[in-house]
Image (cartoon, rainbow, N blue to C red; front, side, top):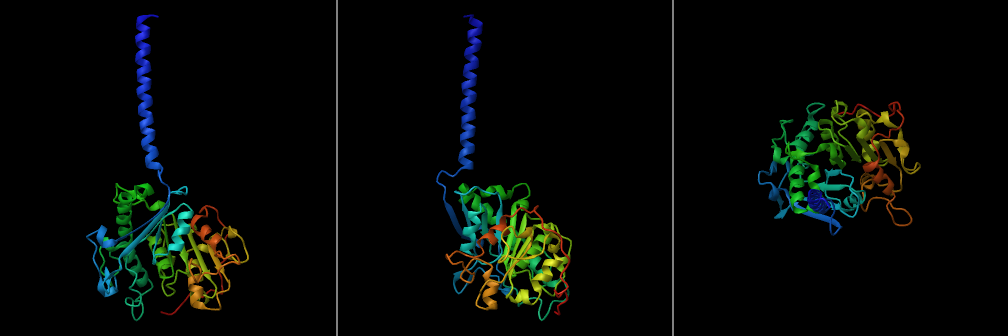
Length: 356
């Protein structure tokens, strides 16, 4: 063999071996980041005041760290690494609901519940809102910590959006297996909002919708809401396109019988994406509608009806013991936003003007 050629061949082989080892190392590193060596469902909990010392209590509106010696600024998170991730983060703007989070994780979604100013209802905008934006402005300040209302004085660390960001940062360190860092926009010190689903029930669904008007998000899920029937913010220009809002109510809920929800849904523009669909009579995908209702048996109890659309003891069950609304919840959180129902006219029987 020619000596020069042999030397070249040996060098080439060595380089290829080194390249292969380097490639394997890179791939191995990527695999350990992308795959949990012990896949499982993780549930994490901490206090907002522990992870961000710049947070403050606001006693005047019932926004506290502790009550009767017990912490109430608890925040919860969960993810199931056994399920293929959809790369979406649900921010739940209501009290922690383990049954809901279990389902969200089963859909491949990350989920967090944050402590934020949600006890002001009944304390502010009294005896009635000063105008058609007042209550919505309070909601927006509670969600962002920015100055939108002169009825409360929150700072950025106490807004739901900043608390969510700080919580996800903590989670990315505390639970790297969950890959929480995919939701952080490190360049802007905020969340990747186009990967975020904001959701809530009742009061929380109303704040979720108001926030999504201000900040574009991936999706909004509104259970038994939105209300604010004497407010006009629902018709404001929206950062989040209307086809990304999904609502679900029981027909015995006072917010439905009082025409609060149908009004909000139309003002949000949801009638452009399909009719009101009764999930008891129509199977998923519910004509691709954004407006779902149910008349399932709740014992003729309006209070139970209000809670029925969220997983829990008030929610009706099938004969086999499973929740009746399992396919509805999956639809609300995962249905493709570009799959649209046919536009419909506004409902002439839905009262649009409500007294304050």
